[in-house]
Figure 1 (cartoon, rainbow, N blue to C red):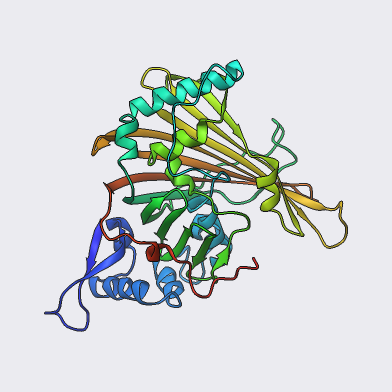
Figure 2 (tube, one colour):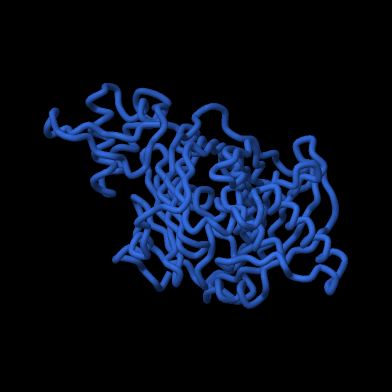
Length: 394
């Protein structure tokens, strides 16, 4: 991955360190010549306003005169739609408060058999990831990775049954990018993601979670601060263990030729209510974890969120948006005595129904962790402050 940008004003000057390292494939698409690529990279670093121009240079034209929708980023119809999809796929949140310190000493014999089984499975998971001492020794984290995304267009269909129109991912036209992730504790984190010339940022300062992009202003998320979903994709075992300590075991399932225990967590009603607004209602948000019976490691992480959007015509009128995400997690390797997943893929399904026509769309992200480091010196609370222009009324 590219980490340095040459000094375009002084060829003898020092090179600039990129805030977000980018894959070679993305850099190659940023212009037709080496000079053009570096200037586009320079523009990407300097200002959000010029990112759209950089992204335009990276598109593959469908013809000499115009570009069809199928060749747009993730088959979106506009830059704003693409950025919205990036936020959904690239920086989703998990609706649970995760304590900084987790405790495995909770009794397992004073709850239901399903809850007791889940706590035992979590204990085996912690042991497989390095043990409590190794996990509690981590007070901060830094990770660099790259992503490849591919999406389908919005497909009309009556329901999810066998008569519905199948949703197929587009062929070719992968969107390539990179990300940098910083974390101080589950509620102090910051993400920067660059894909095909568009940049989104998201973070939490412990009081509010927020996001911003190269084409849209900063916005605050409703409700209390929440952890980033990427932490639960094998990147932060401590967060994962804390999340599933309150789960129940609902059975077994085979995932990638591995027999797994399935743990389930339902979001409490008070947390869902805090995320609602006058026009939106979060009906449920359910999380599943699939833990290998052979290794004890998390091999699949899934969640489903259902939101009702009311129209202005009436209280009982509106549409439903269901977002389902499933992540297959693999390539575990030890980093400073902690077993971290270094690769995987996430399939996101967006389903809109309740209106005149129902629609579905699928987006697949393949991700790879290139660097991970723990206990970062100099990482202070100021590193996680929200943007000054953030709209807290969103």
